[in-house]
Image (tube, rainbow, N blue to C red; front, side):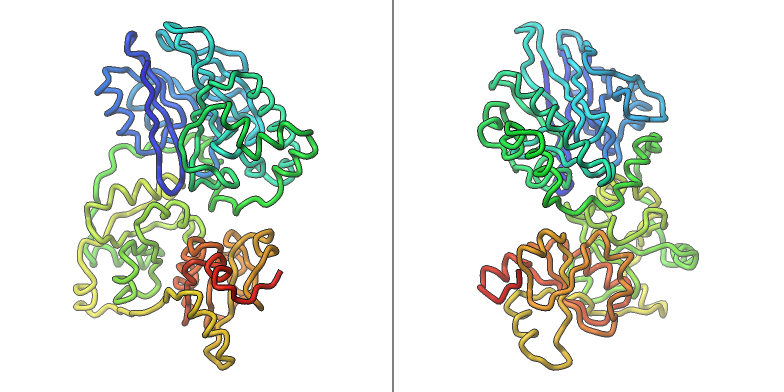
Length: 464
């Protein structure tokens, strides 16, 4: 038996290749859009990918299942309740999928979504008892799947189903290995642990969600629907793409564009995504461009800034980043990348096109405190982009709450001529908000590094 986990930093997505080396066959569970890693690993292990299994229809990332099926001829498997409209094989709880000496027992474990499944994996050369469970978004390290991504109206019902699913899982032995569909960084849970696998026995003792599930149903439901983080940007569209079947990306190759080739696209409404470092962007950038660094948070942030239907041209630090950035965007449904600017900003300026500088300023909480104490026209409005439950636990005095997921449709509530200091919990979400305000032409934008947590550590005034 062979198993390998593949993990995407930032999004916190985990996928798996499981194979029987004796029979030379393998399954990929919850594939990412960058499928080459599965093909390479299977080839190295002399495995033929015959099964592609989705534990559910994802809301935070677009699957690579259709791409992988096109390249390998493998069959895609989804639970019968998925409502998927593309070619696939339906499975139900109690079904068994055979991979040579491996047996994958399908358990229907709704709660995160109605169609969620868990795969209990047995190596029959050793025992018929399951050795490990691929739990998808049902059970995580230190957490369980959130129930609200198909809509808040259904959240309490799904939370009740999650209670049943977790208690069903608790009937297994403590030695069962748990391989979840997400790790730290994912928005599919409240506070998923950074360790990427665990055992059922450890989670039984130390997982807060499982502790609530071992109480009563109402207690668990109230716990599951409270204090949820913001929903993934663009999640409704991502879910729809996964239901209809993602468009295969094929082989992603760099597409260089000269300035003269790019200008007609800009005239027709294409956006410019500047992925260079913050220092380079502040030194010189193209007016109206969107700035998000090409780090592991790009997939999480883009959904709050640009429309997924808008064509995009990239400005890269290095042309070698093209493939990585394209996959970061495609993972969250941004597939309309026209190419990247192959000429630098010196050339842009040389042909007489506009250049600007400055824009978002990163400041420490000490600087924010000083700005707020000035009491003159330079005093910024503090914009808190956390969730209401976080805001209620404590916020900077006079801060205005607009959660990040609502900011794009409520941006007209803000005055672009007035300085704005954006704050969140730790300084991550505020970067996304700052990029949006910068793209909308706000004159003075401060991004508060360290966020409310740093403000609290300095013992500055806090309103609850």
